[in-house]
Image 1 (tube, rainbow, N blue to C red):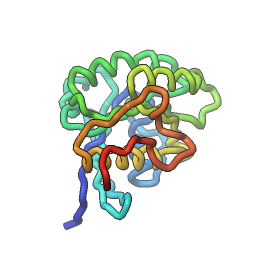
Image 2 (cartoon, helix red, strand yellow):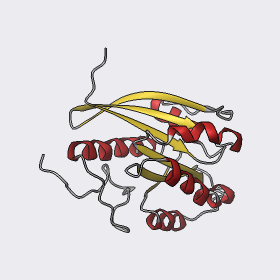
Image 3 (cartoon, rainbow, N blue to C red):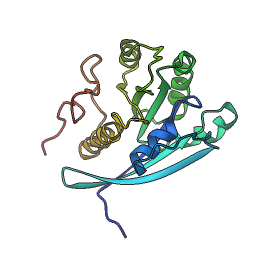
Length: 201
């Protein structure tokens, strides 16, 4: 039996077609599945990583974006340690739906959940939502922000590793993350989430 120090549940939410499944498979399997079909209900994959010589097991739950599956997927919010809200930077409607997703998160998720906003499909040349618009939305809602490309594997590993690092720090400190709007976002050029130390270790 594999041993690990921490086990975290990470749930991806967002409209259908934004690339949630592709992000999960790129990180866990190193694959970009061409012609990926829509997720039915909920699927999950597991990956164990190592940070600071500690093994961390991530249960990554990929939820369906279609309205008809909402009653199923909402039940997975409550036990999540982190929620990744994904939109497609080349599709304005997927960004316009973010407030609706946030309302669901606030209603069903634990108040301590780590929330990350991800603009996916960075490889696309037909961008519709500028980076600064995504950043501003994330700042208004106390979320970390990162842009990714599952197709090109850009920032995908960084996304999950930084989430794991932040959750590990929270678990060690046993307290909430300390957000400061405008100063605590995922640095696209950094290798770790910028956080204030909350314990001496």
